Image (cartoon, rainbow, N blue to C red):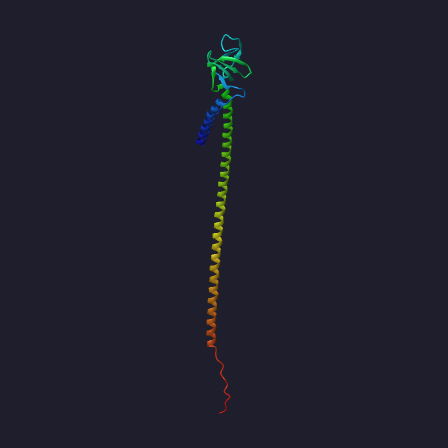
Length: 203
């Protein structure tokens, strides 16, 4: 069980790593590359590529923006922010990697999904364990019935053997009695007096 949880956590970390790479590579529907305002700053949105241009507003740290143009000479970048405002910010404040603000909700959702999957796996495992326990109980019951059947069979066989032995003894006894009776009958007939013949001849 512990090994399965370790493998599951490893899969979670791996999937998060690949998700970070996919998020970092996605492009906005608008023209230009997707960039992010650095998490550790608060920057102003200017009307032109420089600090001397009018401030149009501010961009929250970690906000997702679309890079439209890059002024390398002044080191400013024209962006389109989440409020659909166009403006210029210092190019040093633009990152290619997703901000923590963007990543955390996705990671939380993935963690919750993995937790649900893990819970489902644990539930399935409990169900399988219960089925195995039921099958073992059924096997034990069948073994008990088999033992009882074999014992009954042995008793029946013993009864049959005893009956056959009794039948043989009975036949032997009857045969012996018949032989003795026949011998006695023969002896009796032998010792019976014989009837004399009458002599009718004339002298």
